[in-house]
Image: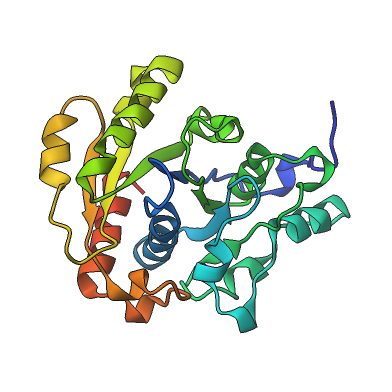
Length: 255
C-alpha cells in the first residue's frame, strides 16, 4: 500500500547510512543521554552527519536534553508533515538547532502523520545520507523498534545503569532478544553501563565476564555531573573521560 512517504530513491545520495538504536534495560537506564552522547561523538569523530531521533511511544525528554529551549528543533511530526507535503529533500536545518553538534528530531505526544513509523523515519534518513541515533526508551521488546533491530543496518545498544539490582533486567532484555530474534542479534548487541550516581562502582568488567561470548562488547560511561544535572547537554561541559567513552563506543560499533 502506498503512502505519502514513498519517494524516488534515485533523487537521494547513493551512499546508505548506518544507524544506531539505543534501548534501556528498563526505565532510567540512560538511553537518552547515551543516544545524545553518541550523536555528538559521531559528529566529532566520523564523516557522518548524525541525527538523534526520539523513537519512544509518546515522546521522551530527548528534545529537552538535546537542545536549549530557545533553539527548539523541529519535531518528528512537523518534519514528516513537510515531507508529505512535497519537500524535496531532508533539510539540513536538522543539524543546526541542537546543543550537541548533531541533528535532533524530538517527538510530540501525538501520533505520527500518514501512517508513518520508526521504519519510515529510518528509511528517509538513511537514503538521505544521515546517520540516525534512535532513543528507543526502556523496552527492547517494543514492537515499534523491530524494523530497526531487524533491518541489517542498525547497531543495537542496550544501556543499563551501574546498579547491581538492575542486572536481572539487562539479562531479561538479552534473553528476550535471543528467544524472539535469535542469537545472532544478541551477538551483535553492545551493552553500555551508565553511571548516574558518583557513588556507584564499576560494573563493566563483571558484566563483561558474565556476558562473554554472548554479546558483542561491553562499555562503560563514567559519572558526569553535567549529564546528571538534567539540563540540556552541552558537549563543551562534558568531562573528557565522558567524551572519550562515547568515542570508544562509536569505534566499538564500527562507525
